[in-house]
Each structure stands twice: as C-alpha cells, then as structure tokens.
Image 1 (spheres, rainbow over the protein chains, first blue to last red):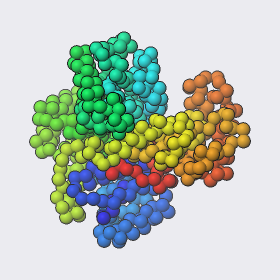
Image 2: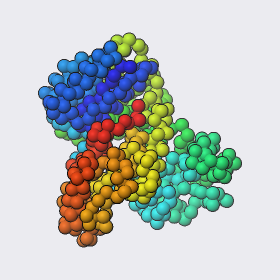
Image 3: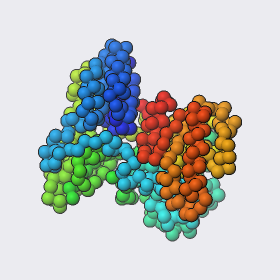
Image 4: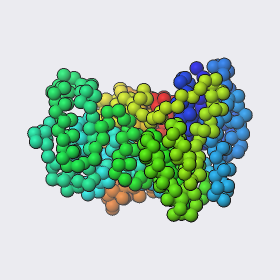
Length: 269
Length: 269
C-alpha cells in the first residue's frame, strides 16, 4: 500500500486535515503516517529516511503533506524521495499581494495555547462535565446552549465537542421514561427556553445503540424507543424548539448544524 | 475589518483549518464568518450576497476559503466579489497524475459518520467519562492509555480529546493530597504500568488554575502545589513513566505528544 505522510513542526493537525481532504477524493487506500513536532534537523533527517524507506517498501514514492515554515527543516523534507504537497507554498504569495503585507512565518501558529480561546475551552469542558445528563439543572443560566433529547441520541458527545472545539458551554438534559407520560417541559428548562436545542434519532438506530448497552431490556425495546422518539418530537414541535435528527450525522456535523441554526458564536478564533 | 469566509457543503471544518493556517501567518485581524452546509443553489446565492455585502462594508474584497466539489454551487460562490482560495483546485490534478486515477468528488467526505472510526469514537467518549478522575480503577484492562497526574494538570480535557478526535480509550487517575506521603504507584496502576502516561505542570501555573477554582485554599497554596508537583515528578522518574509538562501546551499539542511518545495508533482514518 502506498504511504502518505502528514508532517509538521507542530501538532500536524493542519497537515492531516489538508492531506485527508485531498486523499478522500480518491477511491484507494493508503498507509498513513502522522509525524508531529519535527522541530530540529536531526528529527527531520530521521523522517526523511523513514519516507525513503516507505517509498522503497511500497515501490511508489510516498505522498508527503507538510506545512513547514522553517526553511532548514523544510529543505531536508523536500529533498526526500516522496512527492511533496505544501499548501502554504501555493497560497502565501497570492495572499501577501492581496493583503499588501508580508507573511510572518512562525511555528505553532494554529493549535497552540496562545490562542485567546484557550481558557474558554477548558472552562467549557468543565462546564459540560458538571452539567452532563441533567446533573445540575439549577446551573443553566451560565449555559450557552442546553441540548435535550432521549438517552443515546448524541447529547453528551455533542456537548463535549462544542466545549473542546469551540469553547461553548453546553449543558444537556435527558428526557427519560419517567417523563414520558404527557411529556412537558420542566420549569427549569422552560425558564431557559431560548437556549434549548433538541436532538432526535430514528427509533431503529436508537434500538441498536441501546441494545449494545443493555441487551433485551425494556430500555432497548422497539416499543419503548418508538414511543420516546415520538413523544420528544411532539414536544419539540409543540414548544417550537429547534431540533435535529442525528441518525446520519457525525459529532462534527451535529455541532456544525447546532452552531449554524442557533447562531452561537464560536470562540475558536 | 476585512472579512474572511470559510464555506463548505459539509461542516466547513476543512475550510476553516485551511484558511486559519494561512491567515495566522499575517499580523492582522479579520472578521470571521463560517458557513457550513451550503448545499443548494438558493443558499449559495444567499452566501454570495453576504460576501458582497461584507466586501462593500469593509471596502475590501472578502477572503473566501472554500472546498466545494459541486460545480453549480462552486460557480455561484466563485462569481462573488471576494477573492477565492480553493486548495482542492490546486492539488487535485497533480494528485490525479501521481496516482494515475481520477478523483471522485463527493460531498461530506471528511467529517461524516461514514468513517469507519465513528463508533470507536463514541465508545471511547463513553469510556473516558466512565473512567474519569479515578472513578473506575478496576476497568483499566480496556484502556489504551491511563493518564496520571495531580489535580488540574490537564488529564480530563486530554482524555476527552483523545476519545473524540482519535477514538482512543483514555482513563485518567489523579494523585491527591492523601497519596502524597511517600507517593507510590497503587497496585491497580502498577498492573498496567505500560499504559501509564504522566502529566505535570509548573507549580506557579497550577496555583493560578487552582486559585481560580478554590481561592485561598490549602489546595491552591504555593507550598501544596510545589510539593505535589515535586512528588509526582519524582515518582515518574523513579518508575520510568513517560511524562510531559503541560504548562505551555494546548490540548491538541498535549494529545499529539502523547500519541507520538506512546506510539498509540489513532483510529481517525
């Protein structure tokens, strides 16, 4: 299998996103190597040897995605037997012309602690954990958003992703079997109705997920899953709570849709 | 302030990473607009109008970073008054030549639920939550890695990021004041010594963080923070546990370093 390398003097997250976006367009498999923190000449020479070794092994030059700004290290990597793809190279000079200023290359630009957003994000993670699964319903005035939905509709991973990625304080509250008899909004949610965002999920997918956790339980039964989904969707419509069916979506997609529908500002930049 | 747009028919995460990596090289500020899920002609026309409006408002053409694969939508966006940067355009045909196959553009390639890794990630989030902060020490045989360290050294956000981003099952265990008298590895950690990864932090930074949570407490005192940090670092060295000082690092950097030092495989691709 042909090798693909994602290399950087920082986390290599940018190189990975860049390379993955491109390679995912091609219907073929690659062996992936991510190598972060290539910060010195010795390490660069080591990586160059590894690229050459993998190119030889597979019989095809490795694809190398990198974003180096240090010239010395970059020259070493660029002299390997692989094929180099460096998107900074293509875009920096057109941007310099457009902006009328010179780029100031520095390492650790994109995923470092120096972002203003950093403390926000850690605070938001602490908030999401303290307010997960309805554990702290008196604390909702500090929430940016409150995700509601039945158990296993995606509330917790979405809350954590909103916190870690965007610094958004997301609480979440589960509607459980006990709530289902004439499902109404509890007072503590009604008070913050503008912050509510509903998640729902296809009953069949919900059954599969619940069955993986509690096989043959009432909780995972077809009747129970269908009833819970029907009840929460009725509530969302009645109360005009914006909602999303998460069945076919990843955490990235769910949170991007929540941001886009609620107009919440991300603190990332 | 000049406007920068990150637009996509999917989550727009790739466009954001791409644009942010480039703009962070320039010592100037931008007003950022992220617009995900531009999936139809109507929405594309709306976005085009918004770009034109912002270009007019700031007196300079907006910078537009996108990754559209649909030609109809792409043409609409490309006809706006902004300056277009599309990295797919620059790299797809060189890659086609190199690989000897044609790209198969499809939407929702990079951050969708169809990745094989998706269930891994949700399972890993559940694992991280169930095994946070020493809450389940009998469950460590299922861990990929066990982060150890004093309270507020970055264990929880790092565990959650490893889970959400990479599908890695990370437990974490705190060394507390009660452990500090002749700090030793508890039996349940000793059993899984190869999975341990230590976090440490500068005592001053630890004081600041703890003071924000419990002002004027013993927990946040200089003496206590210095003692705890000294003791855990002594333990890491004695037991040859790999460790990292998190003081100057973001969650992205901490987790990239953990992956790179432990050789753990990410399940992302």
